[in-house]
Each structure stands twice: as structure tokens, then as C-alpha cells.
Image (tube, rainbow, N blue to C red):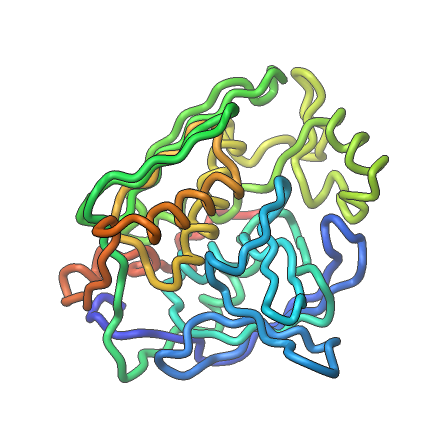
Length: 310
């Protein structure tokens, strides 16, 4: 929908699986929501106290392996990035997501199952205009391992560079204009990935307990251990771009600007949002006219353009 109005799902969609890091069973339902609500999560297993968690950058707890949200009562929810990317990539502005535990189901390690369900349910227009955050001046943050930046643009673009010692991944670069349904066509089926040595180390520390060769791409040197191999030769950098879209969507509204990540991850993207919102004049909220809205991620997303996923 490119006419500048907010959207939600036409009907609820449900998912059952396990959490990647906890290994616990997880049930999740995405419900339609009214205009101006935005994206919220609710922990249905929390029976006393505040169970609602906003999908917002300022409640992100810094973790290296996933994006975790924590509300003021200390209630947390992990691994939200894949469903957030799916909602942004399908153009959904308002939803209530119920989860019965501390981590979302990992499913196949990509956003494809979420996208399939959302687009199958359908997208409904709401009686409110779309607002977006327009990047007005360049912002950059960096650490010893990488950097991330936002620059002015008339649409959301993502450029990413990764470099891993394993020959199965190596150095990869990709740039995409995220308008015209690009997320659904190019990124949604890219799975999370890790090195075999990292998996062993994480499990020794009680992490990745729900990880399998079916819900992550596991590499060891020049070998891809997951059955069927890669969905794309550059699947790793595509997944990094998927994560970036999910983390950027925690701004609370679509971003109009160009994101560049150089060996960046969840923490760096969140640092970038924090810096952008803390810098006077760096971001300004705008009401999208039809032309601006037509260039937002999700406009033009079509179910029949999803890649075939084995």
C-alpha cells in the first residue's frame, strides 16, 4: 500500500517452535492492531505485573548474539529481529505480538515463515497517515570491530560488508534499495549463520541450545554443514542486512535514509539509533505523502515474489 496510510494484518497468524538460545518451546501469535498503536509484544506467561514490551530502540539490552527487549518491570524478550524485519519488510505498522516465554521461536532461522504468514493473512489499511523518521544529517558509530552509519536519502537503502575467516563465508558485500518489495524478494529467506567453533563455545556456555543444522547455516572452514547448503552464495551478508532492517525498525517508525554496516551487528545498529536520536537535527519525523510512502519497505511486497524455500 503506497497511499500513505498505516496498516495492520487482516487476521492473526500463529507460530510454534523453539527458541534458538534457550531451546525452550515457544508459541507466538501476531494479532492485528489499531492505528497509532505501533508494534508491541506481550509475554502471555507473565501473569502478575507488566507483561507488555514496546518494540523500541530505547528498551534494547545490549547483547552480541540477538536483539533483546526489556521493559521497565524487567520483563525481557529475546531474538525479536527476524519478526521485526518481516513486519517492516511487509509494510506492517501496527501489531500486537503475544509470546508464551522469554524468546521468540527461531523457526528456520530466517524471516521467510513470518513473511509467508503475514502476506497470506493480508494487509489492511487503517485510517491514519504514515509517519517516518527522515535522516537529516550523517551519523556514524564505531567500535574496534566495525562501524555503522546513517546518511540522508529519499528512501531506505542498506549497504553491508562482512569478513569472516571461514572460506565458506569470507568477505561479502551487498547493497539494496529496500523499496518495491526488495526485502521479500532478496532478503527474507536468508538464514542466521554461525561457525562450528562458535556453536561449540556457545553451547559450552549454555547458549544456542535450540540451534540445529536446520535452523541456522553452520560453517566449518570451507564446508557448509547444513543440509542442502546455502540458499544464496551470499546468504550470510543477506542475513546481516535482514537483521539490520529488523533492528532499524525499532526506531518506532520507518526510516528514510541510507544505512551502512561494516562488520556490524545488533549492538552497533542499536548504538547508531541511540546516537541518531541523541543528536539534535539528525532525525526528524515527517508525515509521508503518497510519493514518500510508495518508497517505504513493504510497499509492493507480494507473496508470489517470495523465493522458494525448501
